[in-house]
Amino acid sequence: MQTRRAVLMSAAAAFAVSALPARGASASAASASPASPASRKDGLVRLTLPGPSGPYPVGTVSLHLVDRSRPDPWIASQPYRELMVDVRYPARTVTGHRRAPQMLPGAAAGFAALNSFSDVPADKVDWAATLTHAHEGAPIERGSGPFPVVLYSPGAGDPRTMGTTLCDDLASRGYVVVSVDHTYDASAVEFPGGRVEDSVLPAEYAKASPDQERIRALLKKAIGVRVADTRFVLDELPSALPGAVRGMPDFGRLGMFGQSAGGFTAMQTMHDDPRIAAAADLDGLLAHEQEDSTPGHLSTVAADGVDRPFLLIGKDGNDLRTVPSWKAVWRHSHGWHRGLNLRGAEHATYTDAVALVPQIARLLGLPHETVVKNIGTIAPSHAISAERAYITAFFGRWLRGRDDHGLLDGPSPCHPEARFF
Image 1: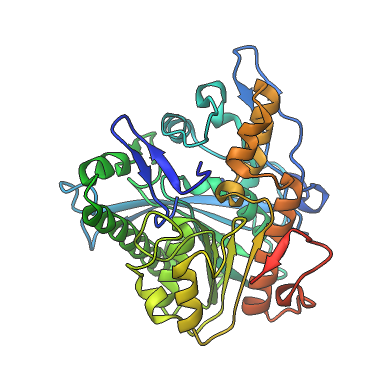
Image 2 (image 1 turned 30 degrees about the vertical axis):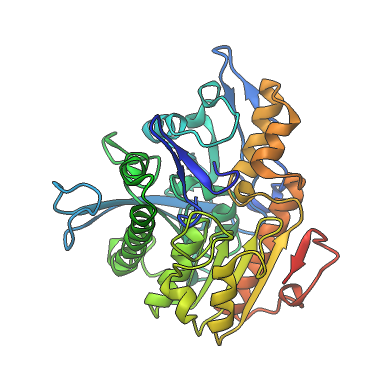
């Protein structure tokens, strides 16, 4: 996982992708603090994710979508584009429905092989053993719907499941949450039947490096592919949903968020597609550059701005002074927008790393410096609480018309780590 914006490692090169920029019981009974993990006799450690905090239990279905209107942009011989998505939703009951794994075995193996947690031995963790708090095929809650829809896009090289903590929580609060795997970008995508497609990004970066123009072209291509993926998912979802879920998402109230490259994708998709009513960017710069602080090579969303609400949330130190592409989108936008960062947060704080890395460190006896390098100095429970609060307040205000009691308008004693800019 990204601890700075260098995320993908291969034998040939480190893929620095700042601009890429690198899925229970009653949900209300679970706390934001991860439960105690466990070790197995085989020496691998098992991890847990924090339970969601909303009033609904969570159901989930996975969808295999095929876009036959375009060839795969990463694999020249493939005349179509395949994606996997997870759909999370408020459930009526989860009794008799098993909890979904965070990663299927093939995807877990690929994630471990492309490990981007700094100084964390990925081969010591049973990544396939982690369970989400979403229950497979649980019946949807129909008494309170239809529900607003929020899409999630992960960071470069990450699977869709590395945003599980936030996606489960949003679903528990009354949203249909659609997380998208960007095939050949994500570390590994497992399709029905067990076929696994691995990331090509390390090899693509190795071919482009050290030519900076070719690297920028690669970054631009990757974001373009992600935006096309997202728009295809929006086109397909109303008819692709299983009958039990169809009709409950309200596609007239549509938002999107993501971490790193996923945040860039959310903002760029809102710029390109009027269906997105609001977008939140979790520490993703908006230029085709490798470092946050590098000026120039702005994306069209940064250069043009947008007329709909957006929220920027950065790691410690990322604000309008230090991220030129954020300053550009801020200056050029005419709708509502807010920005904040969390004191002590790192780039990967906005992923499931914030819950998983401290557990790994405790179980394997890793030094505290390893935790800090990956997720910063912020207390994990504080980070999770703040991220949930601000994301929920943002989509609540703009997709539901709910009063957030000023949480998005300035400092709050409930979240002292948050600093607005």
